[in-house]
Image 1 (cartoon, one colour):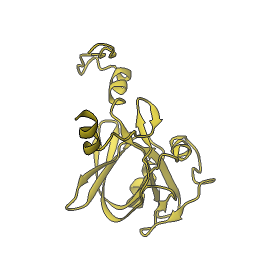
Image 2: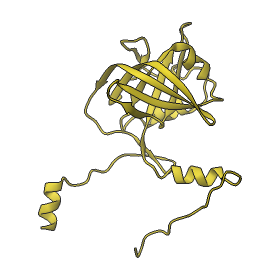
Image 3: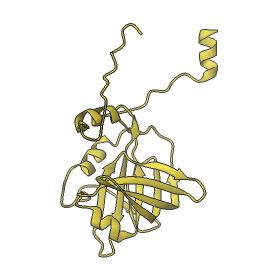
Length: 184
């Protein structure tokens, strides 16, 4: 179509995958932003920002998220046996940045409560899923955590979104009835 940016195409083969081009293409898929938290058996709190969260199953209630195999917090998440997924609201961009940055204690200046299953829950989140780790699966340079949802809460609010390497907020389209009225 006239006026649109041309599509950037790259043929990928196992021998010549350009990680930057692949990352740029994957970045066009808008996702919600979450902070995954846990507490180890010794009481250490762990947390990280993730946009790799997804629903997996309603029956049984399963969700998944991914962590780099080289992440310093991986041993803590493995030892904890569970985690909380905090779905961030549009006004929690600073919180997303805090948990996306390497730090010895990411919880130092962050208010939180301990949820029903013993994992940190962040106030202001628009949804929280408290989970027991059901399984982990290796996926390339990441480990996929599959969690059984054992408690959940949610509230109204706009989600924080990540797309094209930037935090964003969603823009609502007119409801179908309004569209029909406008376009007759």
